Length: 403
Image (cartoon, rainbow, N blue to C red; front, side, top):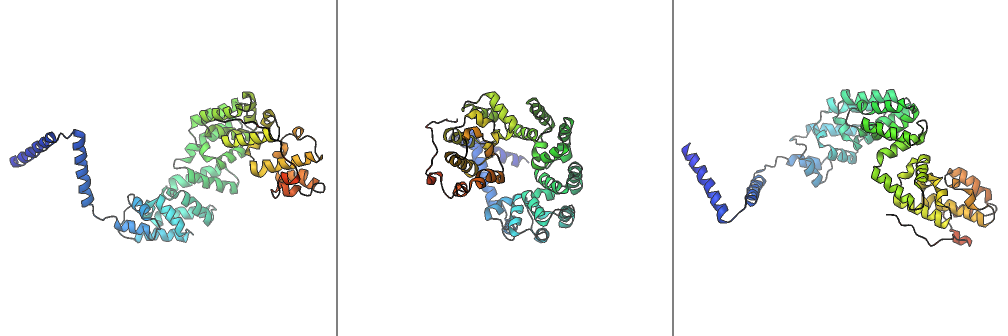
């Protein structure tokens, strides 16, 4: 006992003296101790994960780097359990590529009990109507689904959503999206927000749409969701209309800073706040478009087609149209018809033609005039340009800069 104490004391004094002699700071001494520990570990670590890494590479298909990373989360020394897991997945039409993606995301799945954990869930998905490709898509996108409790999570989610969404085809899509999105109790997350929407008169069909296409929005914190809904109502949106859902969606997805930034972009074109908010009420999605998209559409319609920004603001859905595939081809057709004397001033026409369905536009502006302008369809399809008809846009040399 005394000898041990003496040795430890001598060692302690020696280290202290060494630190003083070489003027090593406490930080440097700490680094040296950690370095010594690291060296010790690197030399003393057994190759206990070599089998796991090897198995993750083949037959799971992971790269050596991914296998090494995954091996930190899972360890097994025999292949039997993992082989059984892979066999079950292959029975359900999972390819090697699918398996590689699943294992890289959730390596612990290789240690699951196939009969007690995997098969009951896969069989349940099949029993409620999911096809083989559906099941593959769900598991590949979120393999942790197979680690969740069938009785406590998956089945309650199914029963709750089934009570909300009546249409079977829509229901399967909702259920699929929900399984991908949630790790919490879906009923606790969604039910209060659905109740909030029902209280203000949102039709159940519209609630179904929101749950189907935007499950994350309807699963937001109840207080925040309720505040957003109240704000949208105060903006003048009717809960009976689809635009109300779009306004809720945009309000949930955009921060106040981003919303204000989009306001500034529209202001640069001379639009007032009242005009911009009217745009938002007509089509809330106009605030989701990128600054580049807003600027390029406005630049073309204002400087090449001659519309006033205020006139464009009455048709905010034009910003959802592709400039290259829809706006320019349709404007080219209208401009040619105007120059040929077949249409009156396009400025009086409004921008409604940009929002028409493909069939309606073709019938009214292309097919109707194909005898007078045979090249019109080729112009619309982009096979020839407006210059090849001996015509051109008048372009004003103006620039509006977005910041």
